[in-house]
Length: 296
Image (tube, rainbow, N blue to C red; front, side):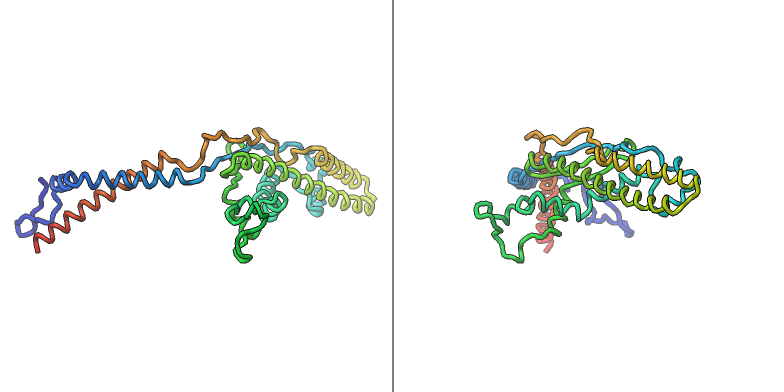
């Protein structure tokens, strides 16, 4: 038995007695068991009522479809490239730029608009039979709200060790999740190709003007080599569909059993633990109330 002696040499009756505590819990075992069963059953019911979600993912690697180093072609004219805005070390920056474009609001809203995803994302507010929203105009979801919602179900992350990039979507429809991931990658490559073509066209135009304004043979030769590098990059952008990222493993439709959520077994176990704690607390609370009444 655990007891304590106060400063006056008397036993302190307010100290917890482990044996009495265990006895109280044993007397209230039925309450504890009932609490465990009720909590587990409630969370189990919630788990079965929740709409299951699936995860579709694609594995990508940054494309190496790039022309040779323009830095070697420039020699001492690196300042000319800086004036033109030409980046001579592009691998890391282009990967970061592509991921930023993928996560951007403009790209995402364009994706949602072109695929008409507002009725899909907010199906509870959409009357499919009538083909219109079943809520007031003020409650209709906007593209800004859809972007925030879509950004929660979509993730894109780069593994710093391997350099691989995983784009994934968690959604209640397995086929839609896989289709959206593959379409996102396809559209991202298309956007980055268009940007590269526009960028190289601007660079080539600038270099052509510089070529016409100089008569120095070495300078003209260096500008010519830099123009050749940009023309090669423009050609690669035109003919390479997987310009920014190459698909290592495209997104496939998840199996019906491969649910991401709800984790029913985990929810039931969590409910049992919560019920155990709540039941024990109730038993001890009722014992404390009865003890005070007896003392009164």
